[in-house]
Length: 342
Image (cartoon, rainbow, N blue to C red; front, side, top):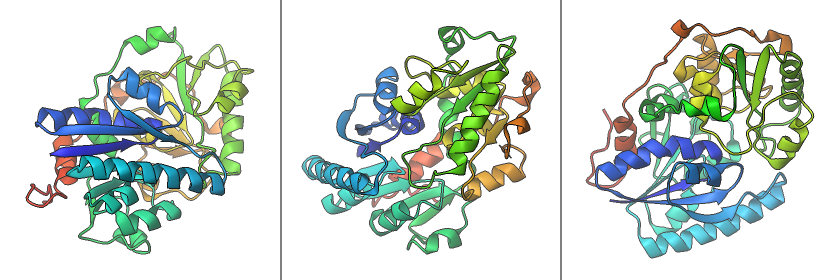
C-alpha cells in the first residue's frame, strides 16, 4: 500500500517512528508530511524520517488557527489528489481528515482525549476509522457522530504499543550532563496555544517549576519547552533546558519523576513505570482518570504534592503491547486488507 502519515506535533514524531519502520518492513511505501510546530521538524530530522513540510501552526487565536488550518488542508488535499494514497493516518490532526476525504483517501484518525470538541466534530464527519484507547467509553464520542463500526477502541495506551520498539538512548544522560546520583525530574509545559489548556493549569505548572528549581542542586530539573516564549521564561530559573530536541522517552526512562501538563509524556512515564504527575486543572479525560485509578498517574493541586526521591529500579521497566495490532487496525480500513479487528 501507499501510506500517508501526517505529523503535526512533537509527540507524533515519536508515536509514528516505530509504526513507520514496521510498515516499511512489511513492504508498504510510506510518505510523511509535517507541520512546522514546536519540536516536530527537529525530531523528525533526529530520527532520520524523510518528510515534506506543509504549513505551520496558526498560533493561539481562533481566527489565526482557522486560517492556518484552511490553508494547510487545501495544500494537503492537492498532495493527496496527486499522490493517490491508499490510506492516510494521523494523531489529533484537524488538517489531514478533511483533506483525505476531499481526495477520496480512506483516513484513520487517532486521539486519546475526548473533550477536544472542535477537532472531534470535524473528524467525526470525515475520518473513515477512529482509533481510541478502550478507556474512552463509546457514549463519550457519540455526541460527535463517532460510533461503531467506525469507532474502534483498542486495549491499553498507544504509548504501550509504540514504546515496545523504542530503543532507549543511554547517551541522553551524558548529552545533558546529568548526575544519576541526584533526583531527576523531567517536566513538560502545558500546550498554551491549545484551546483547552487555560488558566489554572498554567499557573499551577509555573509554581511547580519554581518549586523544583528551588530544590536544586539536590534535584536536577530538565524542562522541555514547547515554544520559544516558554524557553525564554525558563532562562531565569535553575533548570536545565536542552539546546536541541532530545529523545523524550529515553529521558523519561532515566527520570525519577515526570511532571507534564500535557498528556503524552505522562502516559509514556506510565508505560515505562516512572512516577508521573499532572497539574492539569481542566477536565480530565478518561485515559488519565483510568491511570489515576490504577495509581500510575497522580494529580497535583500544589507543588508540595510532588514526591522528590530517587526511584528504585524495581519500579520499572513498564508494560508494552504488540505494535503489529495497531498497524493492522490502521491499514485494515482499506477494503480487502486484514482489519485487525478481533
